[in-house]
Length: 159
Image 1 (cartoon, one colour):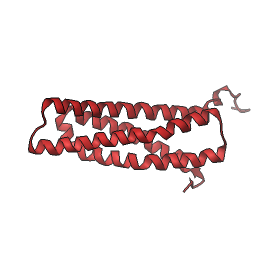
Image 2 (cartoon, helix red, strand yellow):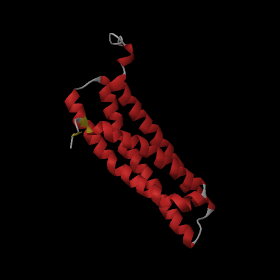
Image 3 (cartoon, rainbow, N blue to C red):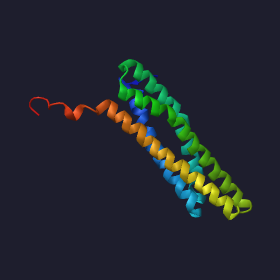
Image 4 (cartoon, rainbow, N blue to C red):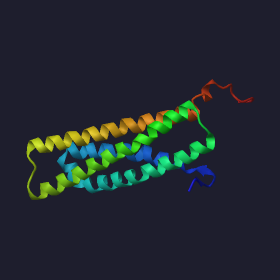
């Protein structure tokens, strides 16, 4: 599928990714540092991470289709190159969510040692921060590729 009602699917899916990555990352980080949040939100984080991971290649595939339609440009090349790396960041977020699930399940049986819990928390926080930073970088490069020169253009007559 390349368009929905005449709009490129990429332009629609990218908004889902831009919401899901930071939401998942913030909830994962919250679960990493606050046990009460982990008990309540761990399964939501796992589902969000899985959905985000699944939608990332769909979004980049739709972006590649769109790139073939609009033609090459340096800004678009930068955006495409950054977008191609996003799968690694959503995969890291999914691994962080899996660690949260394992942590949660293990705590129900026998609590983790402080050192192991700390290492897991640091990994989750690092994956969360990295994913948010990368989704920003990808989105910013895409916005520049699409809208970069718009402000330099003279306003339309009568506006």
